Length: 85
Image 1 (cartoon, rainbow, N blue to C red):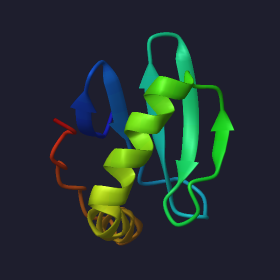
Image 2: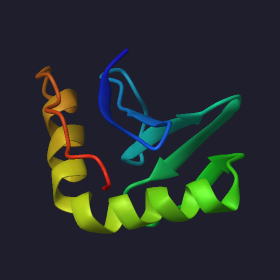
Image 3: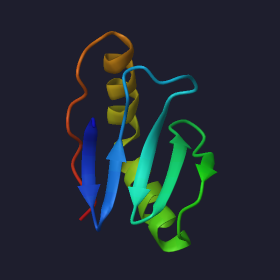
Image 4: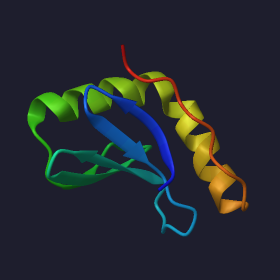
């Protein structure tokens, strides 16, 4: 799986063959969600505390996420993104 970051038990992934709009996948325990990069819209379920951490991370790394999405759409591997500390 193309894991790009991991922090506090939260796993962030992006997939090369994924659909628009640009987004990433989040796993935390038995929870799964998809979050759009530009609007932060969530599909799926995630505990609020975890979702708040993911949004904080998204705000910090927005440009890197967009770049990774573009890399994947062009057949390139994504690069790792610094975890939330």
